[in-house]
Image (cartoon, rainbow, N blue to C red):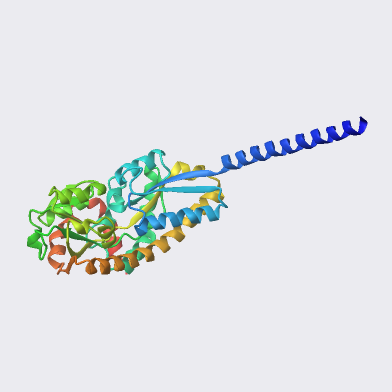
Length: 334
């Protein structure tokens, strides 16, 4: 009996040990899960857009640099709202990140507006000397006044007009009276007015049906967005006037950023920087590929003498005097 008792005792001890280890393991696993920080990122573009691809790249880089302790979940295709809405949600801390365009950011951080002026950049080299230099940093620093932190600027392509089959643009005169969808921002709306057209602000997700049903005669964007949204199906005339080249921006709630451990702040900043340079090249190549693909599909893509467009929009520079210092600084960048 003594031997049987000892054996039973050993079995009980073994079972208790195994159970204790299992409980400890579950508790440890639960604690490890609690230690993981999950951050939400809003993206209004589709999963196939190179900008969205770059946001997933950013998420991968953050996970790598934090050994999986910070996870960025990308919500694409406007799941969390359109840009105006997600900017406000990020400012309030409802979500952690939003990727937006500089055009709508001018409504909440006025200095960003200088980046949206027509033909403000001489070429892409000039653009990134501005954005990666002191001017770009000053504009990014202004974002802290509205509760945001901005990372390196992203490429958003050259924007041009596209219209329905009945409304091709061959000269400035063809713009007169056209209803053109714009993002809800003062500079863009005024730019359209100076061209003789009628600015019609609406969210990006509404544009396809608005063109299809005749609410607007056209819109403006880069080749990638024009292609990935299928807008070419309802507006098959694209004229390369290249009136704007506003950058895209990745923004984060400032309080959330500051609440993170320093090593995580550094990891996020480094990941954003690496992603930005990756995204710029990806986007430039994607625009070339999109143009080639659109030509193959039979889309009517034409170039135009944009001199008259430049002249018509020139008064806009004087109409926003609060940007005059920035304008002078940008023009002085060689």
